[in-house]
Image 1 (cartoon, rainbow, N blue to C red):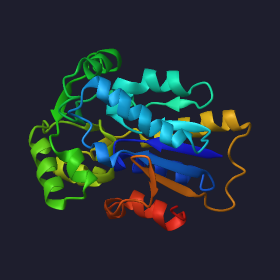
Image 2 (cartoon, rainbow, N blue to C red):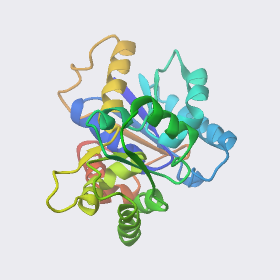
Image 3 (cartoon, rainbow, N blue to C red):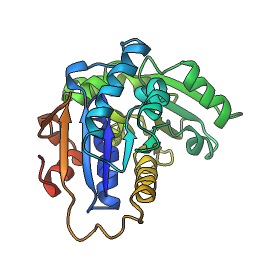
Image 4 (cartoon, rainbow, N blue to C red):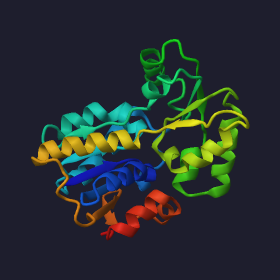
Length: 265
C-alpha cells in the first residue's frame, strides 16, 4: 500500500510520521514545492495551480490515497484536487482541530498563519464547532517560514510573539498550520502557565493519517495491516524533482524518523 502526502514544504512531516508509526510497512510519497514558497501570500488561483502540480507529481507514483497535509491548500484547492484525482485516488484534506478542542469547554486559542486568522473559513469552523466557547484567534507571522528553514532564533521569536497574544487562561491550543506541529512542545512550553493544568495541544496529523490509511486500504482492497514486516520505502519529490529529504527536515524528530527507517530515493 502506498500513501502520498503533499504540502508547500516540510509541514507534511508530522502526518507522514504519523502514518509511519501506524503502519511501518506502507510506502510513502512526499511531494512539496520549495521552489514556490511561501504559498501564503499567493492568490487563490495561483494556490490551486501550484497545489495541482504538487499533487500530480505525487499521483504519477500510483498512491492509494493522497493526504493534503496543508491547511492553506485544503482551504483553497481541495475541490480542484478532488475533481482532478478522484475517484482514482482518494483525497483527504486537513482541517484545524477546532471541534475536538472545543469539546473540552475552553478557553481555546487557535494559532494560525496571518492569512488564515480571521478568515471566513476559520470563522465558519468556530461558529460551527465552538458555539459558546471562548476562542481567541492568534496570528503567527513568520512561524511557518521559520520552521520550514529550521531557523532556531526565528522560531523562538515567532513563538514568543504568538504566546504574548495568547490569553493566560487558555487551556487548549489548536495548531492551525501543519508546520506548527513540528515545534509543538516548544509552543507548549511558551504558553503553559505556572500552577495551571497541563496545556492541551490539538494538531491534525494523527487524524488525517488514520483517515488516509482507511481510504487507502479501501482502494487497495485490504486493511493495510499486512504491510508491517519491514519498513516501507520513501520517495521525496521537491517541486516535481525526485530528491532526498531536505536537510532542514532532519532538525525535527518526525524527519529523523522518516530518514532513519526508510531509504530515501
